Image (cartoon, rainbow, N blue to C red; front, side, top):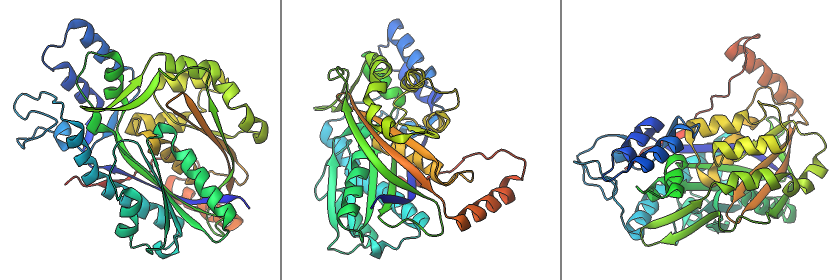
Amino acid sequence: MPAHILGIGTAVPTPVLPQTAVRDLFLAQPGVERLTARLIGAAFDQSAIDTRHTVLAELAEHSAEPSAFLDADTRQVLSPLTGTRNDVYRREAPPLFERAARDALARADVEASAITHVVTASCTGFYAPGPDYRLVRDLGLRTTVERDHLGFVGCAAAFPALRQAARICAADPNAVVLVVCGEICSIHLRASADPEQIVASAVFADGAAAAVVSAQPSLDAPSLELEGFATALTSEGEDDMRWIIGDDGFEMTLTAEVPRIVGREVRDALAPILSRSGHVDRWLVHPGGRRILDRFEAALELPADALELSRDVLRRFGNMSSATVLFIMARMLEDPALADGSRAIGVAFGPGLTVESALLTARVPAAAGVETAAAGVDAVGADDPVELEREPEPVAVR
């Protein structure tokens, strides 16, 4: 019996970082040489990102408050130790996870008391008892709820987490699984002349997303049937996408080879899932960066608007690591034009280079389709285009 995503919730911190303002902050750092300045300008201006969200309010606005990340007087970006960064993760990650989870439960119309399993994923911090434990406490779940946590899987973690949920539902048709992916990437930003660190500072952001998964489809609202998953390793990329723990935070390696590897190898990596899909109506691709989307689009010979949802999420929120692809899936699930039987392939890329993918089919009950269409007409007018402007729930930074 296939599993179904009944609802997807999202959350971002309240502080917003305009991309141009962050660019100017890094350009103003002491000792920035001409070549470094050119690299910073290119990385930020060509990122296809307008705004990102962060738990570090001091990056978003001038503040006289002491900060381990930014000198209030000089606006110099500081480099706190890993322990200091992780302290921020321990404080800020739980409310972000909770807000996304509550949003997902509300959208799925599922009570917290119905949850039987929790699967969490995160790669930007560690603590125990961790996010899975905190969700049980913060949501008031039963203390007998079974928990799994996927740590340090990277940007591709949403699909292994959903795969775990699907397997739980296959083993227990009465299971209702809460999947939550949350990342606090901004605590690992740093000023650097290293091109790879400059790129990381230009694209990564904070956010969380959650999905409620059940063996039973919704009878009165759209759901996404999880038909299958696939994993592949590219022939190279182990040294081109890495995520390691250093003394001054977690260090991302994201070389210029990554988009080229994606372009060369993604078709073969997706061959197993493509052979099962038949037609593909929508592509839900993790926007690791603009060039990755460009190379993916070219390799699969997709039309220019095929990755519109991915590009929109990248433009408005940046790369939130594991949570990002769930933001994209949420927009598909809530699209008033979603038709029963529509097929989508979700794809995300992780260290290695690892390609994780999933085949999803929309299940739209007849009554839900009529109600959704009517709601769409009321909201935008019968002849107006439908714009997917779903806003995630902001989380106040304490």
